[in-house]
Length: 81
Image (cartoon, rainbow, N blue to C red; front, top):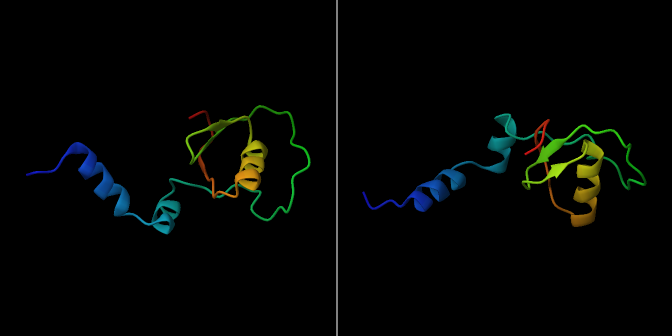
């Protein structure tokens, strides 16, 4: 058909908007969305997988990364990536 595997993958990515992905349950907004500045995070180990593909030790650490990079990083799952 002329479709490469990469082309097919790209078309699937483009077919879903961010809002559709969030509503499908693939992503969850972290609980830090309204925080202005995080001064310290708890030391508990409760890994979360961020939508950027990184594993964070807990949701607070993901929130710090969101603030530092000013990127919309969502929680993909409540465990390591």
